[in-house]
Image 1 (cartoon, rainbow, N blue to C red):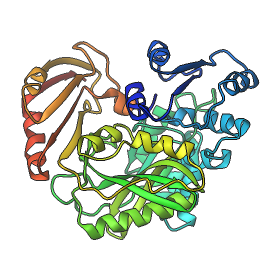
Image 2: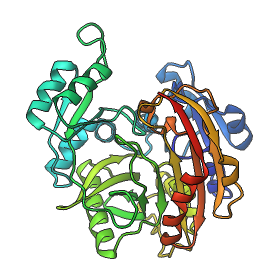
Image 3: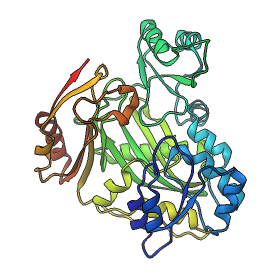
Image 4: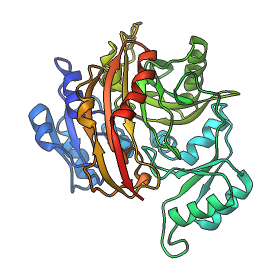
Length: 404
């Protein structure tokens, strides 16, 4: 389901709307069709031709359409066009899912100033690096979740990355990557990462920024280690960030729906890292546990709304600091040998949930991004100072060993 699970959707729509779960073919996740049938209406279109899928869904007479998965943006756009429902146009979906296209639009509209090139093979990458120089970031043109993202400092790094991502260069097709100049970072405020994210509701000319989330420092090379809400930034920084996000969203032509935008806090002011055309992962949970609204419900309101859709986000103050803290393996780790202390985290009042993602002996690959996390903690505290003290305590509590 992407950034929202079935229970999130059902809870958000209680006494408001009946969900119709469209279940397409997917190589990324196994659909929970039993839950879809129990809590809504299942529209299983796996194995169908597109025209048959449209007619199957049309018979259910949906009033709106939305997705919480990057991988389903294209299909959702095509279904929406056939059914006459508002959603991102094909051109907007391309801008949201193709990093090379998106960066050019962001640069053209002043939402970033980042040299970028699409690379399709070893020589293409080396030539692009010769022009852009280091430090640079190499990532899949359509990647998500920090997958296969490399930091390139010099020609040696470029050669190693090229051998990794284009192993059969010239012999077999490979997915395209983008090489971008790394955005310089301002010194982080406190023990936090040098970037934030913003989830925004877009309805024609209206853009309402629902939540600004802080980030924990990245694990090398560029792997996320979690988020917290609200971000610990001064009001003027938050205002500059949300203004930048509005410019970025408009640059991509987004007119409808929820966007999740990552923003680097650079010495020259905030710059857009990327814009996603769906709700951020776990953002709905973090915001609600801090006393905020359901972003899933807001997304559905946008999908169902007419021209007089009321203001979506009322003023409110977060009641606490909620967080998601993830522990990825070291970049060179090949196997998880031992995990000790995870059960002790469950005894802490600040931590509401801990999930161990891998068992001892499991094979690891840092290139999977967030899917390689060894464990993930969820919880809440009263202040950012308490969170800053808690994270090192989590690291000391859990002992991990790896084979390299």
